[in-house]
Length: 421
Image 1: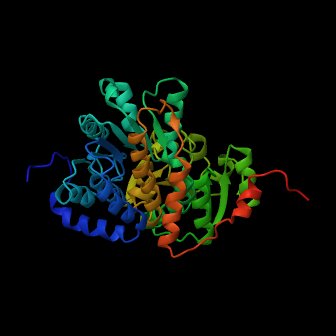
Image 2: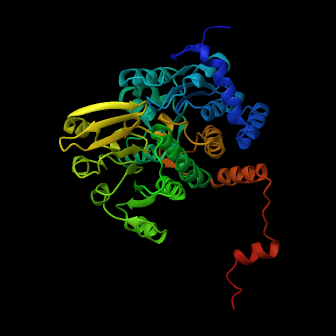
Image 3: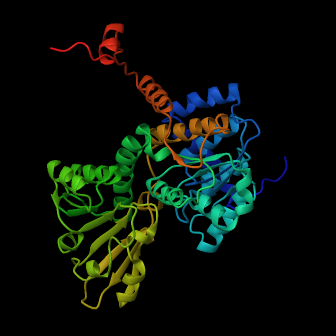
């Protein structure tokens, strides 16, 4: 067997990785269904694909679907700290998928890996955060003529891509997988909610019950984090800039206030906004002694880490994913996971059961892009409704849950206006 081009930490980890990939597959019935279908139909035969994704067990099972569907796939990491090194090894050794990902890689190596994936001259891209797309549009423009389409997994990436589209800079169609109902209603809320709390607890081993826990951002991810923190007995505060979301948080039973006010009260602060410097110097200055900071947004800019470093008089690392900064006042602030995605750095990311639906969207949208390549505009496109419904139906079937169907009379009534009181 020829050597597979790759840059991973240790190929000897591959058996451990493969065992964990198979374990994850047990919780991914929709992906198992697509494996059988793609193997039979080969809908991506010969299509060159590059994926810039978190290299986790769930991503590995998505990759297996794409390969079974005939795709020629290369993978790289979408975050320097989210790679599971044993999974990267298994992708290379057991599934012969070129993979460029090492947990803890520096920024230079991270972009070398992105460019290694682009060297594949992809026709379809899969992105999580839009770094692959951005790098192609900025520095590898010669590749754009090959492009048929792409998909984007996360909120932050969709925000970036919509900004590109508004400026007329987006040169090929990309489907916003994040906006699928079977993605954000479940992955963002239940996946991010559980995995973020998992990462915080693993990193700190601090009891949440009775603590003041602030969530910055009350989108679907923030809702999930708040829900899970409340379930563990925390006193949850929400910080928002959107009046409707803030009102919703009040109606859901949370205290709502500006981040600056919450900073003086909080034992934990978690960001999930997709924006920059949500936690800044003014907030550091008033934080309680020992306040724990974590980020669950895609990029580590949500917390102004350079400002924190500049303010600090000392820095310690009492635990693997905890850096304790001491301020001139004598107070300490504990930053988790270097401000990167705490759920993927300090834990294992979303549970497989929710990624099952998210990655089914990725696979089916890739097929949609390829089969409709002649007709799609260079825009950020929604996931087709029929794909959303198929995934929901498959998930319900796997959960042994049946639902009603409309009768002809009911269907006719809902589509007419003539019947009234």
